[in-house]
Image 1 (cartoon, rainbow, N blue to C red):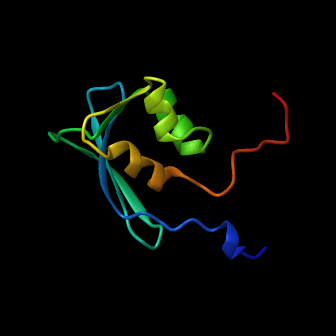
Image 2 (tube, rainbow, N blue to C red):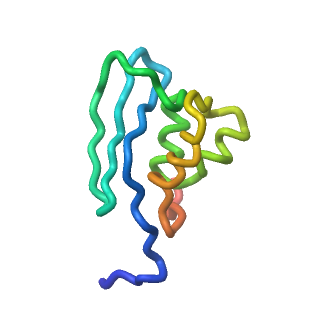
Length: 101
C-alpha cells in the first residue's frame, strides 16, 4: 500500500512537556522526519496540563488540541503550546474502527 502525498502532513519538530493528571511530567520531542521520543522528566514546567483521557483523544486523533483547549479540557501553561500540540498529534485521516463494541 503506497503513501498518497496529498494525505501527508508535514511533521512538526520541537519539544513539549505534557502534564497528565498525575504528578509526573513527560517530554515529547519530535523531529522533522516524523520520529520522536517521549520520556519522563522532573522537574520541568509543563507546557500543557490535561487528563489522561484528553491525552488519549489527542493521541488517537479524535479531537484537536485547539478544540479541547476551547472546551476547557486542556490548560495551556506556555503560550503557543496548544498550537504546537496540534502540529504534533494531527493526522490526515480521522480515527475509524469498522467493528462495533
